[in-house]
Length: 199
Image (cartoon, rainbow, N blue to C red; front, top):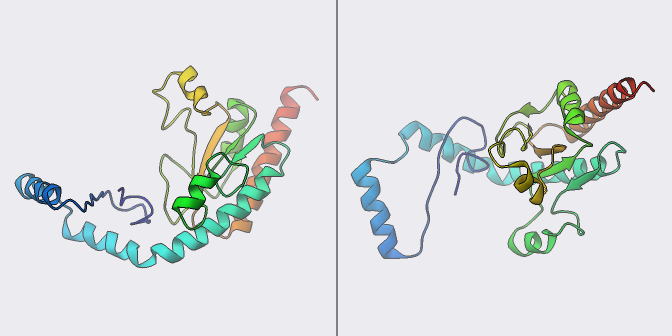
């Protein structure tokens, strides 16, 4: 498990954890940790424990905000598609319902193309623009040029990672503030497209 993301949740620690019910494997892992010293320092442990204390309320709030934002974006004319397992028509919805309580705090949405993404990200103000997720701040990322940039374009597109796709990890900001910010950025994106086409 990554403890860096939602578990710690404050973008200030890099950590992971391995859990097993196999006693022999647990002993082997313990031996490796002891041999190599690959364990967290005391301060990093404290940061992860601090995050665990608020994990439930952070996930509850972020997930509720994600639903609201996903629904709002799906109604916007410049947004071609919203991908969120909270939507019953999402192909992963039944799996999400089976394995989790709630629909999570991460969604993706697709704009027309790379130029639309460029204009949108130039004007959006609230989310942090970075390759990460699971934090108290909302984080917007552009997979085609960030996390999946090394993958050939054809392979990315087979997986639905188009040049217009953005991923949003919803944080703890007021969802209405995020929606208002997205709308103003989309409005400016539309204006730029109108000017470029000579409309």
